[in-house]
Image (cartoon, rainbow, N blue to C red):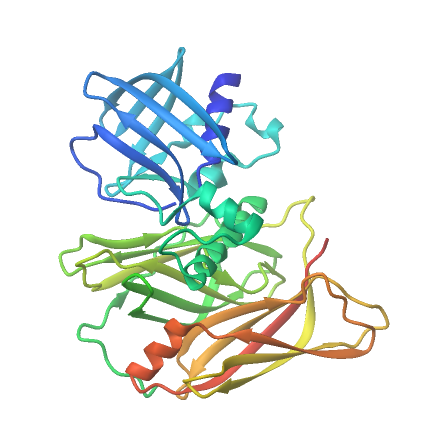
Length: 390
């Protein structure tokens, strides 16, 4: 049992992209999460496999045998078996792998599994490249600061999930929204406003879903994670993302509102015809430390060429200095259609008692290019602010 848990935890260091699931599963698969590769699984035709996981310069290797059991793959190492399942487009870790004593580790393995899948294609970066950038700001060849910022946003979102474990040009074919059905067992979030569109990215095209979300229950909820799946006119998958790209406060009291974006890269050669999304929440538990709402207002400064910013005016009206201050800004066009969410924080700085601070947040070039190409005017911004408990 300990070996199984150790293997699972090693895999969880692999940082979740998806790819087409082929009938012939032999060959190399990549362990990928929010754009970062941290390992490989080589499934050999003779029924053996070799897996290597690299994190922080430390590589762990495993060898064993594999068999196909319907839509499951069973990977066996020294008598212990790990199951992978196909959802029709990717391989994922089965919850059957969670040992009975897994809770003793302090990790929510179910949440970890939801973030990881196995792809035929490597991630945009390796985990070691990402670590090098975080340590000394070394950019890998061919990777821009904007690319790295997008990866970093996905990293923060996934880490938070694991800790909680218009004047708008019409697209050629308007994608249809198909929100995934919510289960009765999970607390419900109410989507008050939403918008979906496809725009150019640094590496091709990306689809973005933006939502204004409210806790419609009588309980305090934690917004855990989300997923966005794209399909083409033939109902074939055209892209997927399994994390919140950006979000406002995740702890929502009854009636409280937050902002959310989900962004998925569109597969090369694909045209998006429809999309589905999910937002997952849970009731808070005893060890959670919910945040506190903060007074904040916002305004835009956009000239579409040089300076493109959103400003948040944060007010601490209490008699106590505050730290851990964060804001989220919901950008809209002149007709009120949602376009994007940008976030910012005061870092280690403290906002003094009965004082005000203006925070400047950068608006992405991808959004500015989309607005320019489609003659869209950014016309409004909403803001929420909160103090994160430390």
